[in-house]
Length: 124
Image (cartoon, rainbow, N blue to C red; front, side, top):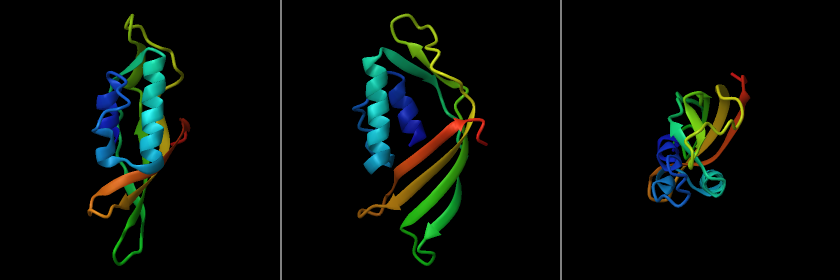
């Protein structure tokens, strides 16, 4: 999901079909809205986030359909810039952040992120 989002963020393409490959529900809506806001405000994002998610829990244990992930994501090399000038957008601090994500098994057998929460810099 983060890889697809980073690829779309290069041009703030909130309509990229890649976004729905690994995200759905609230997660997809949140990503699309954020990219649309960047597009509207003339921002693009360069670089990539660094993520190393781990499984926190699975439900039900015998045949999981929901997986909860935790991560300490690093967005210090994934920054916003003004599309027209290429200058940094100064959109706030970057760094390591605690991330929770819920992934569910879809009817077709694929797994998609349905929701995520990103905390402030310094939370991990």
